[in-house]
Image (cartoon, rainbow, N blue to C red; front, side):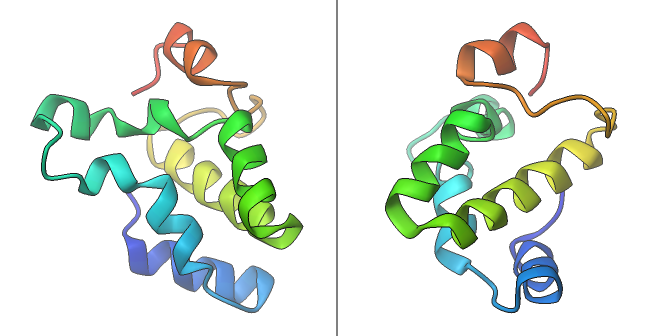
Length: 100
């Protein structure tokens, strides 16, 4: 799984700035102390999908949405998700695809 620093550095390379707030928001459930360990390892179902990207767009704009997509693609790539497959639409779609 790519680290927070990796996500920030990739966005600097591709977009010119780190977008820390986007990466923190996408991985908020992974970092939550109250969430059981099992759910932490499966935190991506909550925001790592097209619906999550659109939420980022509403909060921080179009460039931030690009950063969210870069983050999600990197995480999916680390799980050997085929690069030509689309990003899941929402949490239900994410889960139906057997992703974690």
